[in-house]
Length: 585
Image 1 (cartoon, rainbow, N blue to C red):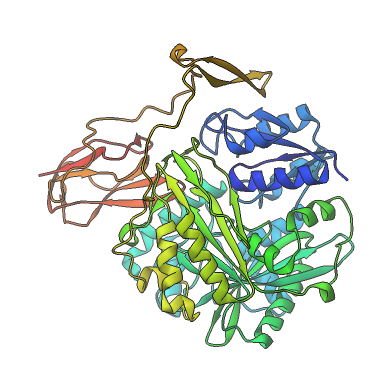
Image 2 (image 1 turned 135 degrees about the vertical axis):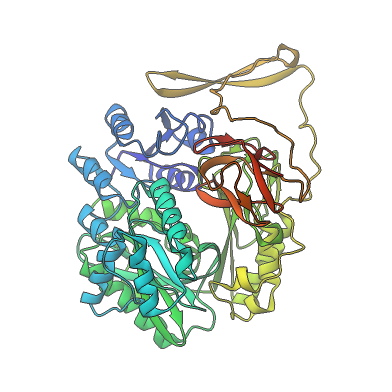
């Protein structure tokens, strides 16, 4: 067994792995960016080391910095979590070349399944069919138009080395292809470090069903039941549950066997997920995620199997602690993702900021996997997942009722979250009857009355009159140490932090009125593209700039028709909520 594991990630998944390491008596090592210097995963780890940089590219995606920390701390294994380097074969190979174990599949399996095109081919070789699509990297928008002309619209442009809806754009007409391909490539580069894309047919009303598998180095591959992840927005999951409602048993068995066949076909080991689309009684292979999924807790709750513990054991060369015959799923589990997003009106706009208060629900069958505590800041530079609320019930209706009750107790102050949208989803007759699809949230669910802010009365935290604790973070040769001192409150001791990149302020109006011509951005983020120029005629609702926040691109639209008088930003500029970016006469 390993003595020290470095977690090459952040947020709730890093916290999850740290806790399992603690249970197993394994020393945990955290890494952190400048902005995460005092993050929860850093506070909980046995050791923590600075990577430098603020953005993911400068920190968590900085291979040389992570390799330096591995050698410095003496870790004998690395857990990649999900996202970042979890599906990067080059990173896995660099780890193993150091003589350090990568807690995941072998690099060769990542290469086959991480490239969604070769993954489609691999699935076809073992008799598992996928959604019709191309098996070549897109070189030109005309290739998308040719595919659409042959197969019909809509079509989906997808990141070849990505997943989770990142780098995916749905195209409804030939005229939309150029902008969609460009946007998909930018998102793929930003989130996965590679911009290759391909195209496939976009099903009109499918359900997203996935199979959790785990495989050891002795050739044993087991599936642990399915998860229904159909409640989505922008092709990113909001609610996951296991087992899938209204799902035929014969299809469940066939899908599980197909997932095992796909895993065996690429020599897979460790935990992974094989994803399918299910429509009209037929299922189609979608992709394989060669890592732990965000939604793995629902599989854990119904199966009683700790997937992170099994991951570590398998990576250490041990056989699985169970066989397929030992897997007996019981009850029903539901997970909702509490993201820093404002779902008002169904827009789901990113909402970075400081969590001023956090009240978590408790009770039988309730679990919280979080990456933040009160006082922590959710940065625009990283994924917006604050935490995952998971419940278990003896049947689906009880699980739904338990989740609705838990959401009543959950309070998050300071930022908007998706919690209120989940309340609407769970109360919907469509969801309760299991009749929803991947398009249901965006096309059918009424979120017009939803607000993203918790009804929390913001106020000062109680403080002692005489002495207060001041935590000071020190770094010695890149290794983090934290010390505390009790000082008079009036002393005003503070810890300075490196400021974020200064934004172009031009004007910071806090948001002009609708139709004023003062086009503002609704949240903090980075301008990735300016779509207009001075003197250009624009129509109300026409996109004028593209803003990236929390790894998602958002079109900022003209609030009235007219002539562009001034463009106040350029690509790469950081802006804050309410900043004016374009002025229209």
